[in-house]
Amino acid sequence: MGRMQTAETIKKALGGALSDMQLPSADVPLEHPAELANGDYSSSVALKYAKEAKMAPRELAEKLAAGLEGIEGVAKIEVAGAGFINFYLAAPPFAAAINDAVATDMWGANEAAKGSAVMAEYTDPNPFKEFHIGHLMSNAIGESIARLLQFSGATVMRANYQGDVGPHVAKAIWGIQKLGLDAADSASLGKAYAAGADAYEKDNAAKSEIDAINAKVYERSDAAINEIYEKGRAASLAHFEELYALLGTKFDHYFFESETAPRGVAIVKAHPQVFVESEGATVFKAEEYGLHTRVFLNKKGLPTYEAKELGLAELKAERASFDRSITITAQEQSEYFKVVKKAIELVLPELGKKIEHRSHGMMRFASGKMSSRTGNVVTGESLLDDLSEVALERAKESRAADPVQLAKAIAVAAVKYQILKQGSGKDMVFDRDRALSLEGDSGPYLQYAHTRAHAVVEKAKEQGIIAAVDATAEPTELSRLLHRFPEAVEYAARELEPHLLTNYLLEFASAFNRWYANEQILDGTPSASHKVALADAARRTLKNGLWLLGIPQPEKM
Image (tube, rainbow, N blue to C red; front, top):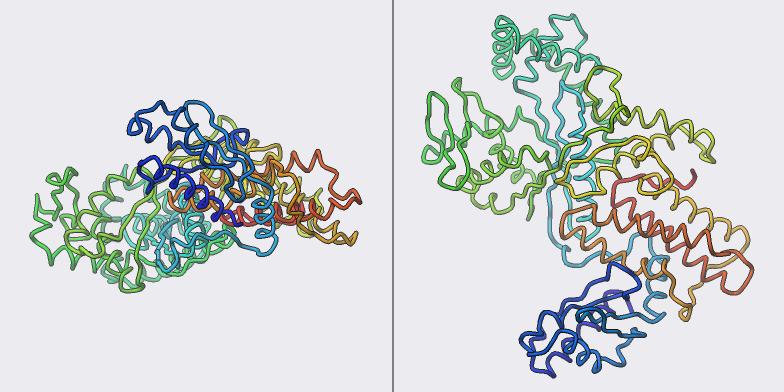
């Protein structure tokens, strides 16, 4: 009996017992207890219907449990606490879980999302600027959400929206001109932007010059500026592609503000009943919807980010057909997105129903642990470089064929795990030493558990031990947690919260390491075949789980 089938069988049995007592049976709660000591499944159904049954919850639980004998795949039923009914599974469901894991490289996909199409937009760095920590967080969360939905059966289109026009571009171009930098050198663009941004705030003459450049970029009216713009844009985008490859993301659609801006202007002007003039600008007064007023066209008639979002929504729908459009950005943009979404609902109502926003918190650094090589700001790129440099010393001592690539894989694991281990909307404190640790609660710890399991399977092959599942083998902590993997994935995908899977994988990796330390796996006994099968199932589960988090899965460390 399969994992999901076992759960449905228990629910059906509980529903039947409720019906026998003339109680509602359509909605039967069933979940995994937090502690394995409390069983493999637990139901709070007695607490839910105690009042209706006119009984104490525990009394009702005992009556229900008394009529639940003989459920296929269940070895024992106990009533605990205030009235929870706990179910302990027999060996066959765990054997089925091991077989499922060994049989395929990617297993347990949820059928619920099949047939749906999702566009996930994330990362969104701006050409002419550095790839900062926020982009790294958006990428980690967005890529994992995309993979969770993809694993659940949805068709997922990865989208990247990049600001290739606007004041930041003008500031960078001004800096290139004033400092005599090469626009084709991506490493110079951050320096140029920083110079322009500083001058814009402190020097009125520079401010006027930058504003003039901004208008010329939109108008494409100056040949010299156009040349700088094209070189800088191309250099930025090419460099970003190197970072996307390192992070394991391949985008299906790229959108740019240069193409959404004119569309946004047209949409705003076509809906004067929604967007009204105010002090020379065009605004959306959203107070009547419990929100706030935002400018969509400034006093010069140029589109703001808000207007460009309208053009982006329209352009997304033209490029692809989707049921959901999910955008992952920083928490600080949440109120901005509420206003933009309401505006889209009013002017593009069919699209407005499909738009969702997920936010992430801020990354801060443990005191004294990080410093930027290029200034006071730690960029996403400099963080990855720093972690790779530290990890390289360890990688050189490993069995890996390419220590440099392993160091990069460890760096990606270190930062992604720290981002994904908590709710996506929460701030986090990044500690480099903890992030790179092999002792637990880190990405490299999960990677190392995977390489251990891989080594066991490879050694078994060398010794001619064939993996074979014993359907009567006593369930272990490891096999019981293995059984929960598909539901952990489904839960994380449904909630769009990768941390739910991250927490599961940490518990699973810890259980594997305890089993590995305490068990003589290749001991020459008949049970070795079952233990090798369990090790292989653990290896594949860790591989799949790491993939879902967007974390590389090295085979040697």
